[in-house]
Length: 167
Image (cartoon, rainbow, N blue to C red; front, side, top):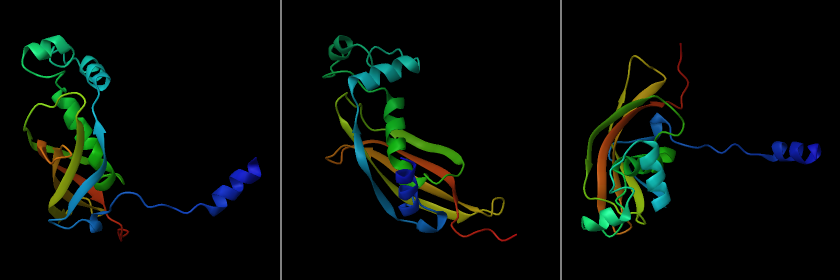
């Protein structure tokens, strides 16, 4: 068995994941792949674990009595789902997260809906305090397959540069 593992390791090719600072340009857009269908189990578990006890998130009868067709997705779960969908393209190779601004929810999401994400680079700049990094800011949207916008926010990260820092 060790020979098989050694052979696999010898033939393995590095697969670069994520993007470096140099890969981002202002106006560049990303349609993040996969998407995620938010299930009732996802929603109830998340709402319970995060102490979101609004019955719209955990009681289908209550949600229907308020005019919804089923449970409403906890907004924080929606945000975390969309944020997570963007990580592979925007910040997977690491770098400190600098925060989220201007988060707005456009409409309630009902369990069973599938959420997708897209992002646009809205700013990119060097930083003197961390020469091995640059600051990139994105505008991200959570959308349905039909393009119905669910939420919008801006976020920024320090993003590693590909080129080594001379020192």
